[in-house]
Length: 129
Image (cartoon, rainbow, N blue to C red; front, side):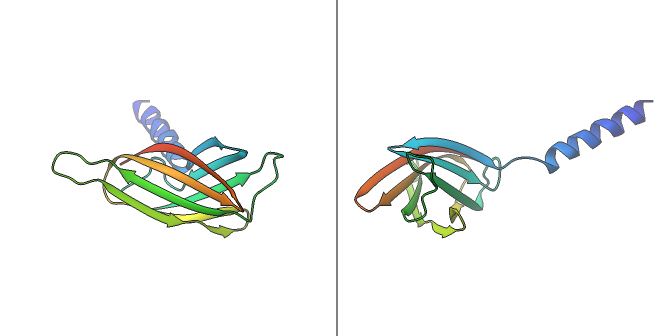
């Protein structure tokens, strides 16, 4: 009986890992609704794919903006601040880029949007493992 309970627990544990969702956050940035997904939850040291979906004030997808992603970690004793920037490339209806986190810890991420003369920014934090 104990073996059956243990086997059932292992099955549900593995099933939960198999369907783990991407890291996702939605923020308002001016007239835009910005939905960000990172392919790992939690994000990990090394390469992580980020996808940014933009919707305008009317809810329509925005496909003609420039999206820049800046991610940084503040200075700590014995370590200088780290700051990186990458540009999102439109693929389908999302802007995609690669974030390469150099170490574990708390990182600040800023999505900078430029569409014509309009500029907006969405900020959030991630805990990289």
